Image 1 (cartoon, helix red, strand yellow):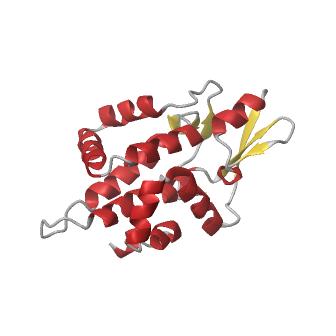
Image 2 (cartoon, one colour):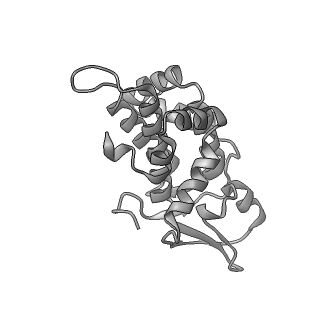
Length: 194
């Protein structure tokens, strides 16, 4: 499991299939810096709104760690990293594609960390982030008691690629390909280099 950032998991049975607007509202209200960074992110990269919506639809706000939906710390970490690369120490902006890449890479990394679990129903059917099925769809088909167990991702490279394909729009992928950042983002190497 991740270094204790995500623990004490639980699942909410009633989930919004698309909690996008609700999640953004909560993120904005929780921290003024988040609200400012989100406005800047959407101004710089309007397509990141679609990235966030795809992520919200995929994991919903129904998977919780310490009674908080994991979607919130995932997005807050990504906003924090984005904010950190908006300006160099000498007050010059990082290149736009670098900032986009850092945001997307952090979304992928944090989602993988937050979801090092499997959710199992009483018949042994399991959901995990690797399966590629939106959690709300799986939950609708699996009634009864649910169990949450730790689960190490078997193939982290494959998982990162799948998450990238899931959340990144074609316009985002095109920008990252043209600037040769796509491979670094998918591999998780871009943030470390900036």
